[in-house]
Length: 286
Ligand code: MG
Image (cartoon, helix red, strand yellow):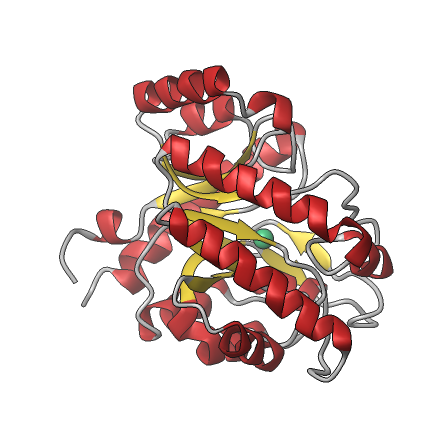
C-alpha cells in the first residue's frame, strides 16, 4: 500500500450539524482533524444553498468528509428495547418514508462529493425465516441501488446483530456496494459479540470504522454497556488497530464519542493523541 501512515490512516471524528451526537465543526477545526464522518443534518439544512455553503466551509478548513451518516426523526437510543422499536429501516411503519429520506441524504452526500453513506439499519432479525428479515433485505437492496446511482457505497453500522447475522444479511442482499462501518464498542454496548472476533469475521467488508470504546454490561443484550473514553474500555484498541491492519483495512480512523460539550471535546482531543501514538507503533510498518 502506497502513502505514509498518515495518508493511509488519517484521523477522523464523527461530526454533527444540528442533529446527532457528533462534535461540532468548530471542534474539528480547533483540533485540526483532517477527516470527518458527517451525521446528515435535518432536511431544512440540506437545501442547495446550505450544501454550497457547507462545501465552501469544509474546503476552506481543509476537512474531507469520508461518510455521510443517515439518521431519522423518531429514532431513540434510550434503551435496547426502544432501539429495537425505533431505529433504522427495520420498523415497518416508518420504512417507506425513511427510504425516501435515505435517498435524499444520498443526494445530499453526492452534492457534497462524498462517495459513501451509512446507517444503523436497526435490529436485523437473527432468524432468516422471519418475514421481517426479507423486508429488511429488500429495503437494503433499494438503498444500495440508489446509492450506486450516485456512485456511492452503503455502509452498515455494526453492533445491533452478531457478526454471523450481518454476514448472512450482506450475502442475501447481494449488492457489490454494500459494506460495513465497524464500531467495536457497539458490539459490547449491545452485547452482540466479542468485537475483535467479529472484526475478523466481517473484515473483508469493512470500509470505515468508529474508534470508540465501551465496557460490558452485567446483563449483555438486555441492558446497555457503558461507553467510555478511547482506551479505557474493554475493546482493546491496540489489538483493534492491529486486527484492522490484518484484515487489510486502510482508511480513516474515525473517533466517535457519544457525549456532548466540553468533556466530549477533551475526550476527542485525548483520543487523537492516543491514536496518533498507536498508529505510529502499530500501523506504520507494512
Ligand atoms: Mg458508531
